[in-house]
Structures are given as C-alpha cells and as structure tokens.
Length: 285
Image 1 (cartoon, rainbow, N blue to C red):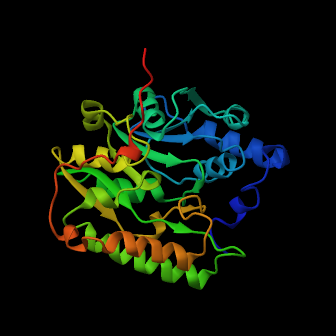
Image 2 (image 1 turned 135 degrees about the horizontal axis):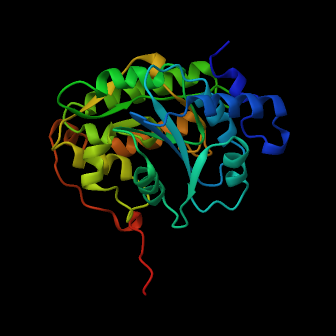
C-alpha cells in the first residue's frame, strides 16, 4: 500500500465527511509540532481547497523531522470552506484577499519566522521525511534554494503504468533542462529556500503563474539552485495541472510546447520576457 493511501480516503470529499477522529488526531499532532523558535517555516497556500486541504494537513502532521518547525496557512480569498478547515485543524493562518499564488506566497513569507521556507500546495501530500531530506541539501554551503520532482496518484482514469511512463519522460526532460536553466524546473509544490535571501528579493505578485521559478531565478545571485531526486522526498499531487484530457494527450501537448526551440535548454538565461496573458492587470485607483 502506498504511503499516501490513507490521505486519499478523505481527498476530494467535503470536510463535513471527515471523521472526528482524523480531525482531532491531526489537530493534536499539528499543535505538538509547532515551535516557538522555528528554523523551518512550512507554509500552505490554499484557494478553494476545502475538499483537499485536510488531506494535505494530515500528511504534514505526520512529518518526521529533527528541525524546529512552524506550519502556517494562507487562505487566498477562497469562496468555499477553506478557512473553516484551517480553523478546525488549529493551524495559524492568514487571509490574503488579493487572489494569485504570488500574493498568497508573499503573505506567507511576510508572516513566517523560519530561516528556511517551504512552499506547500494544499492539493498535495508530503511524505514523512520530506523536510529533512530537502534540508540536507538546502543547508549546504552555496545553495540558495532547492527543488524536486513530484508524482501523481493512480486512479480510474490514470493507471500506475501510464503515470510511470509520463513521469519518466517528464523527469528526464527536467533533469536535462536543469543544468542550464534550473529555474524552469522549479514548481511551487516542491520548493524550499533560504527565507533571508527571499525577503531581500520579494515574490512577484504581478503574474498569474511562474512566481516560483521567478523567485528561484532571483535567488541565483545568493547561491546555486539545487535539486533533490530522492523518491522519499517526492510529494504526490492531484491532476489540476494536467487538465481534463488523457495522460497521452497531456504528454503530446507538453512535447509540442517544449520542442519549439528545444535548443534553448542548453543555454543559460538570466532574464525572461512576460507573456501578456500571464500579467495581472492592475485595477486603476
């Protein structure tokens, strides 16, 4: 049985259907983990994640770490019961009314206290040794931030074998790409960094996506972007980023996108142009 199987028992279910036993045991473990002087901040951002957030927090409550940590949340202007889930599980959280991952992540950074900061996505499960394995690399001299790979859970529409092929091809591409353009391999669900550096740079809030890679790019002046390939540090997530099509169609789409100017991955780049559709239009005062 996969390590995350029990979390799937409540994933995508209304919070009202989560048992009192799961709620209270998760709440107690989370409370016991909170340090008054954290070295590591684990920050969960959530937008309309009422059916997934509890499973994520359940997985975080079972982290096995030797580091003093804090776990806090950001409710990014949700219209469902996301805020109630944070309350019920006793997680200290903040409401960010400006909607976008950048605003949510900046809110989390502004309120966190740890020297090291972990981005956490509310629709994702994290294995028990995730923090310690990532920290083994992040604490090394000359490292400013750390990324990793991630997996999807098999279901009726996605076979384990199909997912293995999809992830093998994707991971191979990301591995090759990371030598010259590591910032393009960073994903917010599995990204940790030195918060002291990030507070000097800030997180971009004017784009709809890519705030994670943009931050990684800005952190390169402080140290190298490193990657962790240990499968014991591989989170498991849902299918929001894959769309509604099949794995094959998703793979073909990504292949077509990446094959355009594929030679670019063999050359470093220090500045990227923003596409118009990715910019957040600022409302006039």
